[in-house]
Image (cartoon, rainbow, N blue to C red):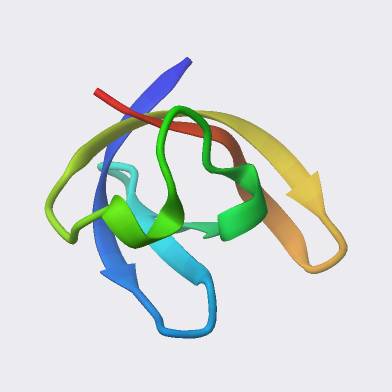
Length: 65
């Protein structure tokens, strides 16, 4: 599993993870595990599995550390 930091959350149920590279990773609230989307906070460390969605790379199995 990769590790990153939540960079941005939206009120529409998705967010972006700072992966430590030049490309942030998109994630949807349906891919959050172990907690709810509403309990996530910007700056929080998470682990995730890189997957592929209809619009490109996305984080799956997003879990708080």
